[in-house]
Image (tube, rainbow, N blue to C red):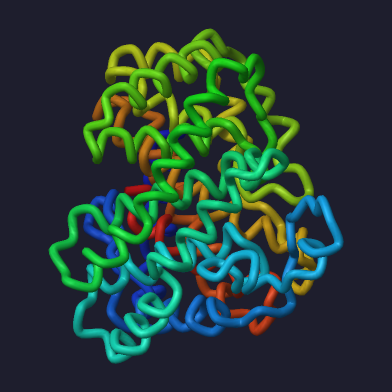
Length: 368
């Protein structure tokens, strides 16, 4: 009876997801999402509205003199000054590149290229890179913004497009600087950051590992795997009952599992995952967050939590054995979480619109 109930619940979720074809389609066994061209056009317009918008702006800057205190956002960060904050601008850039690759015939593609040609120049990125070299700025955007810069470059690496080649060349010095900062930081990171926001260690390491493997940077990959193993390898009994916090856009428990499924082989991960999340803990994480006020810049983070939970659940499910009963639970929940927030991305409120589209696109791709 329990198995039948699970199957019926999964069918109901899949049927409801079919109504969301405006944004994405889903295959017959609910394991693969595909963004539609219509969805790509609508989502692309969100970062397009704000990448060149300087204000409002949340400046995360440590001033050391009057002269650098009075600099405008575009003077400090000529590439990534828009979208309210630096990291949101970076992953807004990533999203535009991803959509240009997937949908080269988008009606908006010329405008998207124009924006990227304006921001991703060698001169602009040189200023961005120099910012990280100041003594009190070396921890700037550690490690959330760092991770998205590497993800942006990873997206450009395997794209044989003339514009992409220029953007990639311009961005590489910033990537090289971030990798050096990360390699210096890893041996000193005695404890993981297990929050559900920007500092989350597992998220940063997960994206960094993707980049290291894509670029065949084996030395960086080895350091990331060592850090992940030391910080998370012996973890068990995730305290999921504490999730979510009121401003989470990551699930600490799932983000850690999403990292470890990349670090361990299938058998090793299955064993680790069984110790990390028991059935009750996993069930707790399938309960949808309640987003009570999308005009609140912190509460709206919970829409991002729906998207990040979805991509973590999709990735984790694929690493578990095919007959593992947890796969269906995770896949069903991934669809539900995606549907929960996808139709609210374009809410008309800047607090969500300046960043959520990137999370939505990454979730629809299943965290790939």
